[in-house]
Length: 219
Image 1 (cartoon, rainbow, N blue to C red):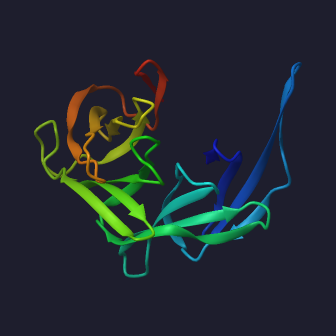
Image 2 (tube, one colour; image 1 turned 180 degrees about the vertical axis):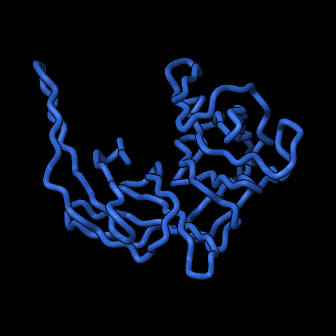
Image 3 (cartoon, rainbow, N blue to C red; image 1 turned 45 degrees about the vertical axis):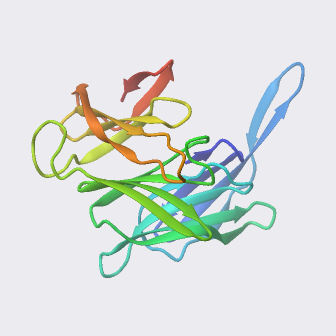
């Protein structure tokens, strides 16, 4: 998992342990060189993690982790990395007891998501979470009836950023259907989600990649 803003790579080695690879980038008039410094390990309290994503808009590398507790409840917690001291610090926010069908997180870039907002994707609902140190606000839409007319949710397995500002996302489900998720711009702190619209069908995909000018490819 790469954090371009802070030049580090994070890898989940096994349950409860994350390995950090700092990246050095040297740029001069003649050549650009990139090297990876000696990695180090950081330990998480959470064991059953489901997803981990770096967030936008923080001065330190900050990530959100979606995890499951011993009672099969699901939660989101954030952590910050002190690169100099090689320490893991409590992050700016957490969200307890999210929908039990939740499967992964989508970090939202600025300007749509300032200070580490995320989209939480599940089988039953998709939620937009604005997390801050003063509390969280959530905008949620139900996808129990999917956009192709069937029931039982979308079962999204992949996503891709369509627009650089984070206003549209292309979602792929287990049947190869594509859906466009839209974040609507409003004056309030919450950006309500537009219900995912059916966009077409392809082979099953694990990754949707933005190539250029809102054109997507899949893998």
